[in-house]
Length: 247
Image 1 (cartoon, rainbow, N blue to C red):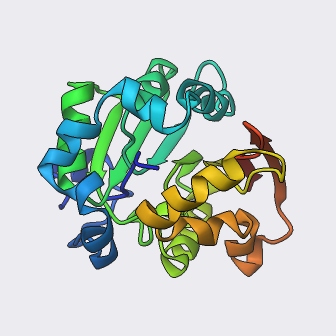
Image 2: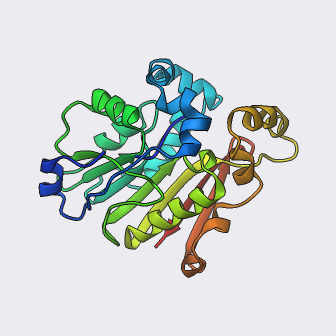
């Protein structure tokens, strides 16, 4: 529900050490400011939602399980280049960083400055991590520049046209043979009580979520990626999904 926001300019040191990163102005999208100001862009949002117990409660006790399911796709030791698309409330990024091997590097992008500041505060100085303000629908990385891309509870917060661009960009920056890992909401099974409990919650607080709920992540793939290997698993009565696409 409220874990991310994908994001001004990289610093001079970032430009020097990461030549694959282009420099361009970034603005917070109108849909984000108008719809999710209370969860992501207002400074008080971080003060309220940056609590491990709260993000776990929002996911009905499933945060740690879903976090670990995503991270398992990268292996116990990560020695490649990983891109996390959007910051995440809770300890997702900290656990990812713990898996970085000597040759591993993590880029995290977010479109909201307050989220960038919050992640810096959580991580402190990490020489294997670069945090940048970028828009998930217009990434500033080169083609095929990352071994793995992870998108954790972001797609349901985006309008369909933005979601489609975010998925296309995630595919673009992934190396051949690399993985794109999506974890997000999913329409529960007919007998699950959450099929009915979550509808008023999502329709009230997450106006774009039902669009994802009633479709498939594969529906928003670029036409050139339709034949790629897609592994989809669902959890907690179908309320959550993990979709792994191999490039």
